[in-house]
Length: 475
Image (cartoon, rainbow, N blue to C red; front, side, top):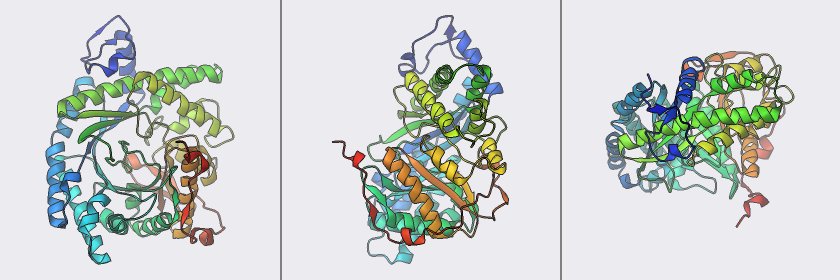
């Protein structure tokens, strides 16, 4: 039941940035209730970012204990307050999460002088400390078992990358990410090679790969897992909110089926505006209750396996017979742009990824399109050039080589680097072509995609760094 104060007036979009108790019109409240009840509108995640730099030490036991204590003391009321806000507004908050400083930065001092095996053990010990703290406060996931190696490695980042398979196997809530490329620095192909090997090892337990993403241009304020971390320049603690609303956007597209594409974009933009206002309301109230800063709203349309809560279904409602057919990239570009414009009108604090997720397993419409042969890996790659996320929750055959995985990562990084946007790869080698793999819950199910028969190994093995593109020279 909504407790928002309201009148018959409508209010400008500037109100939301001023007061958590922003006034809504009667019509807006009723429309939002419908979005929640019928169209699966939710706050997909409230993520508390925590700075761990003060936990540094050259003693792994000291670091682990400090990390555990800092996470617990900073986030101990996160779930309680999120549940209270959820009850107050009748708005589902699906996930309560924490993101921390990239752990590789804390490992630098810890692993100095250690053997490779001991350094891996140190990383795993810290991961277990994060996991223990996450379970103690009752959150769903914790991100930040991460390294930023787009320009090169440190001792800590090397140790972290080598420890990822073991760390993910021995924890339940920990998520990991590695940034291997940026527009300013190019693509670190040595890191890409290593991530191909890591993913291959981690896939012995396929669910591990669902908690691991390889990035180009990773944003420091992304609230979505597995890629969330608390980046340099962020406050001591901050609330970032990831909203969701594919069902609400699909509904408005279906309601205006006979309009031209420009008018369609305008209607999507207006709906995105309303969704973003609700998201910022929740984010600011959560920040106020926890006594931390409010960070950003991530406007990414995050689908789920629930029927109708699908980005693919939005594109099909635009007039495509099946997502993936000719015109899909253009339709996705229209959708992503309209969502961003609507959100930017609603809030001055938009960040993270902010686009349209197209994860195959987590989107029932995407998975069905793959099954029908409408989408292959190459078409997915093309579509990622106009959305914000990348090749997400892609299942490829178990016998896919580490070099081929690295080549797929390199291709996606190239799209991100050249277009100055975030792209990521969350790829899961398991099963064989033609199989359908079930993950359960929000991770859904996916057919195993074909990867083609030709080899990229000799290209990948060259290593080194693909230089930054000319568009990086902006100063």
